[in-house]
Image (cartoon, rainbow, N blue to C red):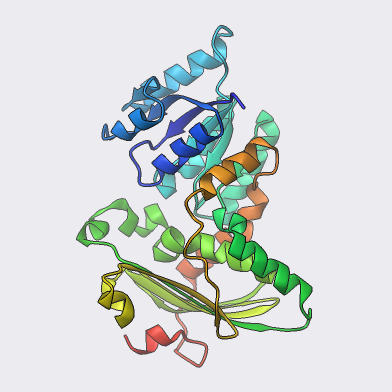
Length: 316
């Protein structure tokens, strides 16, 4: 498709998936930025890309490309920076005459979406976000089955996600709520988007547990009642996972039936990029319900535990 990309946050965990997606779509990464210089992964995809560790120099390069008609314009700027910088970096992309492709969470607060919508209008550029679970075959199939079922039915859903993190996590920006949005935002926002995508508008949001390593609550959607539990604490792993030396446990049950979606994640970023480049990507409003959900989870008062509490909470 021969599109030109720049990338912000090249040393981050998720950046290689974006680099691969750019390469897979026959596009070119011409410039990348990160304060850290541990970005040797670029050589696997775009060894000729310019790299900057100072944002001012990266800004100057992007601006020069924009002004000089001799160079192909930067069509997209991909954003893989820490969560609290997403809003600022999206604005930078739009002001630079490029569309933005931003990793989840798009922003930390719903009012940021309104500001970005105004910037889209003023600049004529667009903001795209990665909501890869909406493209997962198992999730698409589940949504189809729910849509075709009795419209009055309310499903009982249990979402459990334990993804172990080491001691480093609590020393990083990810453990600072003002920077990451907290556990529910940092590791859960795409699950809340998936639930909204499948089960409709959100009706109720209650939180039972919320600290630096785990959170749990209850969400009621038009077509589902959801008990959820998220954790980075390896002690929350089920015994069967620990026996297999697995550090991640991911489970979604609908009326007691397990939804298998542990596989099929490998190429979802490439699929996301393909959809964006073909004009079918997810936009600002697609993220609003999930962003509102995690924003409320951060601020809601804690409820007393009840029958709607996830069973993992009861054993803590």
